Length: 117
Image (cartoon, rainbow, N blue to C red; front, side, top):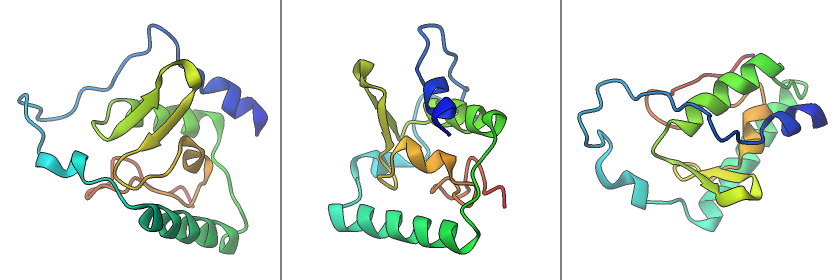
């Protein structure tokens, strides 16, 4: 699993996925400013980990990880903190570590990526 995190390091020439139907304005309006509260993030994390534990703790493959990271990096809700390799979703508040859980899915409606299991 440690090798997957090493693969997360952002390259200078990484491509962002173009958003479908993007006409310069967000279809989600000001939702980007409505970050979840600390309690909301804790609930999201707890529910994700509970579901993951119940499923037998499955993790994604390297290819699935790369696919998810590429999609998230192209999303307006994704926030990476400079060169620290720390990133999180402003919609659900979860870190990039959640991308490893095969049972997790994108929090948007409709989701940009789904669970594997």
